[in-house]
Amino acid sequence: MAAYIYWMQTQYTEVMETTAEIWIAACAHELQRRWRTVDPEQLEELAADLWRAEELRSLSPAQAARAWLRPLTGSVTA
Image 1 (cartoon, one colour):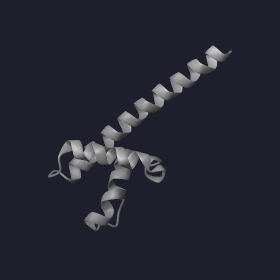
Image 2 (cartoon, rainbow, N blue to C red):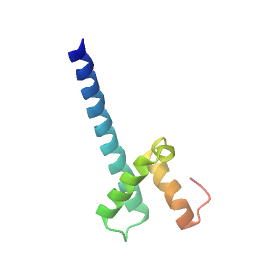
Image 3 (cartoon, rainbow, N blue to C red):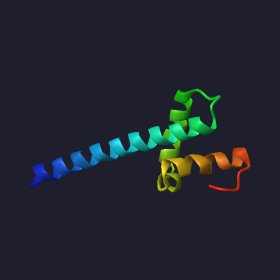
Image 4 (cartoon, rainbow, N blue to C red):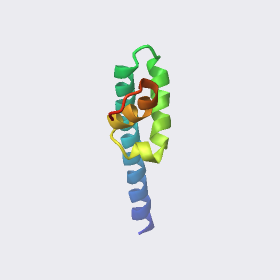
């Protein structure tokens, strides 16, 4: 039973890491679409920071990027 629980925890961790990687990549891509003058590596770091914010992580990557950019762009829409 302990081996099964360990296996399940490992699987969950792998899925969450993959989910985080995909979310961060998609968010960085959306940031790049809207903020082309910034180095893509910096945008990936920013996207990783956004992933750490629970309220942004609950959004889609594109929605999170737009929400973060909203104060910078003055946009009223998400």
